[in-house]
Length: 153
Image (cartoon, rainbow, N blue to C red; front, side, top):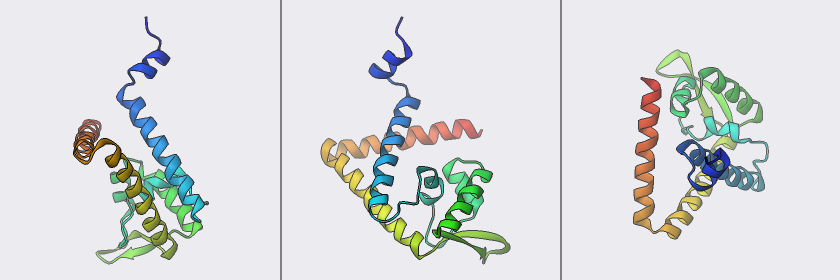
């Protein structure tokens, strides 16, 4: 009988692979962000920052996009407000609702993170070849979408 440790070393399941990828991407992203002056951020903040648009989004939309509970997003938004990356503004479409909007520091972080992620993707596309990387990404997107759909229905 093969142990879980052996199986994860030789034939890891989807969850193990996704976790390894997430942790490796987060480590590179947040280490590089810290070196560029954003050393007050932590990987947990990615649930908001990865989905934030320049014009802002409602917390409920951030929760839907990230797959996190609204309460978790609310806590993260509170932290990011304190750190100066986002602010809450009235939603022009519904004055009772609030948008989570990036501040100037938040916009700078978004530009920096986009550049880091683009470089990561370029490195993998160069290593694998553009066509193979594009196919991998398309397949990975399909698997993620299919799995997320199963957990929401």
